[in-house]
Length: 338
Image 1: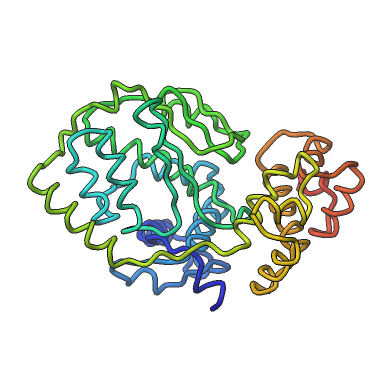
Image 2: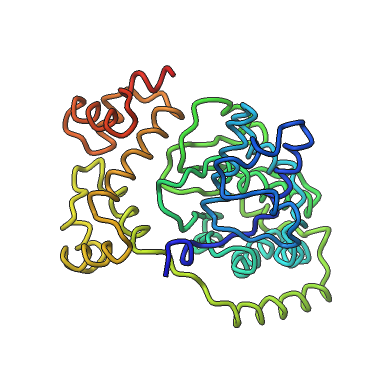
């Protein structure tokens, strides 16, 4: 089985919408699709699905192409949720904001194998967390912001209330246009956090939805349950679990194969064999993750080089400089000003 066979899939309808908009702006078809996992064929599909890393990459490509640092966020803040199909209708037909969240969480696999949602603390603390089950090196900032603004926009429309969370936290970094996001959310947005999360006021979770429809709601939930019973879920590859374990240990200087293997409940030899089955090694996984994080830190934050070296688990700045030049052909300083 190839990596592409086990890569989590996600609804690509918004790639389709974005590609059409880019073409309408006069950008050539070649520039719109080159270097992405998509081609003109995506414009013709009725319900496109694609590997999530390709979808996230397309949004990053579009942001680079247009020079718009807030492309994902702005499109989410204006998106029409009904384009996602069944999952949107079951959410909109729900009785309250809380029901909307619970149903979108339960039936998310109708639209995506990639997104994981945690509502374990929603009822008690008003916290909704989510992440994408893909390797940490996959750039996803634009799509994460697209999803974050899009979810709140949909719930505000359904409730006909411009309610605001208490706090929004996002795992990625951002050092520009933070005020734009905070004006939309109506609260502080913290970047570089442990989780992508909304912190809601309890009173807002109980808001009734103007789009609620009890009869339609019953029909749709029954249909979604039937789909879930028939739908097999692609498990994330071992490399995803390894990268997460590495990321948790980098800054502590504990991202060693033995420590990661122990955290995953296996021996170092078994871990090496599992990674070999995926045509990779622990060192290669570590290096690729460090390289991806380094580029993100340099592009999307104001962290000084010594801080970045520390976060990546290097004991000396010189070691980080040497590694980064090996990865990119440039020093970190040259890359940051280029």
